[in-house]
Amino acid sequence: MTIRGLHHAQITVPKGAEEKARRFYCDLLGLMEIPKPNTLSDRGGFWLRLSNADLHVGTEDGLDRNRTKAHLAYEVEDLSRWRLRLEEAGVPIVESVPIPGFDRFELRDPFGNRLELIEQKNRK
Image (cartoon, rainbow, N blue to C red; front, side, top):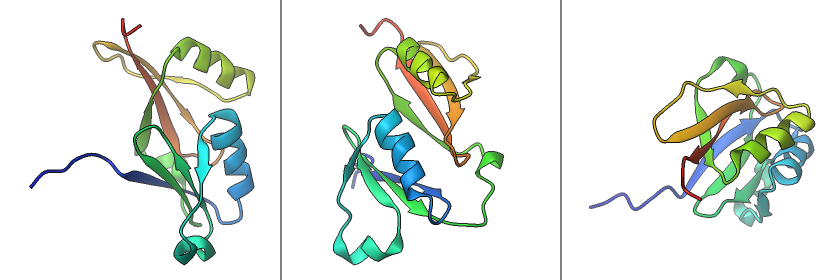
């Protein structure tokens, strides 16, 4: 009996905010939207494909997403270019506590969900 990997993670955005979320996750971050199964299509939200797992963006009201430390960490290439791209888009960057072997920083999406971008040092 073995856990083989991560199939998907889910975040939420306020109900009715899907288009704004698509602009952030698809247009700015470059994630690819994939079809949701018909059995789930009436629930709102949308699904995204990453290289090795999916991200499900659901809808949920009544939360203060800015108050949680819960987050997803996206492994990236060229962290400095990501920083520049996000800063140019007006996204505030928060410096992360250093950890050996990695460079990283944090940000919040337009809805308060916490994200971390992380790159292994000397991987190039």
